[in-house]
View (cartoon, each protein chain N blue to C red):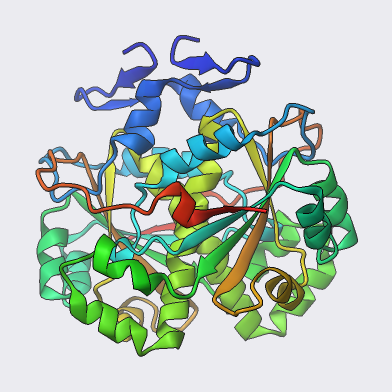
Length: 205
Length: 205
């Protein structure tokens, strides 16, 4: 398996070049090439992230694929000026959201704990907090998975949250988390911002 | 670059076998082999995730490496019985936390927005919510990065949150997010739980 390598103990791991693509050389793009991101790319992306772990297999992340011109206009009006320009330049923009009623899937996706369904059904605030927790883990998987497919994700938080929720989720059953632009990244010219050192992040006890 | 492949448009992407290791065949392990996870493995893991995107480059995730027997005892007493057994069987357990004072690094990691520092310094609740948001994205990167190194992550939420925070963060400056066991995965014998379909997760507008 030439794309994989092994550690000294024979553990299969990604090669150095694959680690560069996913992590070490990956950058949040300033812009994208004109190469389109089609429906099949989004399907491929979901096939990668669908098995990612969530608590009790809850899978609360939902994705709005903003494909039509009309949907794009509805999205753009709730973004800050700067982010509106970024979204206009992206081949595809997704609105990532949390399904606040994710517990309704539990009888299928986590069938051996009926008490969990009952508990969450009666605790909307707990449900919301736990839903956001897992949907954000899933968003992390998605950002790395996009890179694995040769795409880059440009996440944006500069939006009118209440406006976006009223626009796309008037029933109040979902909440916007993040606007994510996807495309083949154009070369990044700016320098990386500083990152924290290992010793600033990790404490050994 | 034999470990990478390209799409029809020449976009570099991971090979099918690499995608299997990271996503399609990856499982949350039921147990681990005896192979140790050393300090150098954790350093390699941090080198992979350190550049991952966070809002305003905030990087709020902090990692407690529970390495000594004493630290392990302090952790175990706050876990549910079931999770205590799982942690006992793991080569290494991490306590992932959010640094509630991550804004103190902003003058270095995001130097061109001094107003952001001022705003966050005076808004502890906003700071907490945004810190948890980004630390969870970083946790998602970490779970995938562990797989890239041939390890597997077993995340656990079954712990006494107040107890764990009082034990490890008595100053109240950090909050526990997740307990994460790391090791080389033992073969998983149980079947996968059902995942949602593409059409249940993605809506095209």
